[in-house]
Image (cartoon, rainbow, N blue to C red; front, top):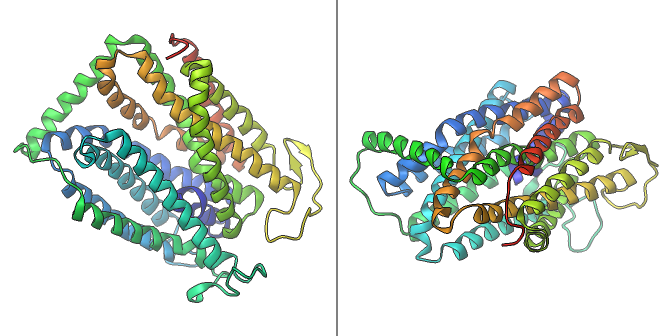
Length: 429
């Protein structure tokens, strides 16, 4: 949340890249390269680690690989030693390692949860988001707001001598993320139980894991509606994830926001995203999960069209006044406030679609097949995760605008929506 979505990548696009358009294309290209690598490796990794047993040794290797990459982001400046090519390499590599860490953390869930998987999974996600919001608030209050406002509860100067003019609040999020990863790894190594060794050798685990993966794919023949749903989900989730990952980049480049505004933007959207999770359950019951997902896709697409037409002096493709509405430190114009409101609705609809999609899968397959199909569900989330970033990169370079890059995402949302129309599902669960 700090690095990819709200703070560091938007900082790179706004303050380091030659232009916001070039910056968005570079960030999207890194995501595309990472997506290819993850699609080729992550599904098999899950099968192999199940065959080997222990998860913590490989998780340790992956997290220790991530930490220096995040720490190196402190040195990313316009005149610094990390040029565009090296930056793409760092961004792509950390994205691949992050995806691998998700696979390994998920594989560690069952032995760690001691029979309370659902409770532990929900608690882990809740604590992860809460920690991210706490980091955003800390950076905002300790480094970005001081000197900008005359509020008694905000320091008069940034703490620890942090230099706002050198964009150090944004750059500091890299080392902060690295430290957070290290602390989390130590906690896992210290107190989390691991799966027992199976005695399988790595070579045999790779060979048999590949067989397991092929067997899981063959399961698609047994549940046609679920197979159609997973094909649709690959497309619309790629579109929604692209909006989520690159929305901050679009906001920074289009609205000209710096770290101060992006921190407040991230906190606001993170809180609003909670509403999406709560709303999804109500929509699933009222409309049925398939219709709920269709509605959530349609809202995301409509909101994206409106967002692409919102920039300084323009709201939803219509001219807007540029006179400041107040004298606060940020978000003073109608267009800025409108952009936040539009992005907030997008965050709600995206989060709701993620939740409703899981519910939809449970009504499409027999209860005894749910475990297998959630494995395919995870596979469908990685198989084409390169597609959204690739389209954003291509569209950005082809049109020479950030909005043109994002417009390509509408194709993914539309294709997923159409495919989902052919999925037959019970109206109520």
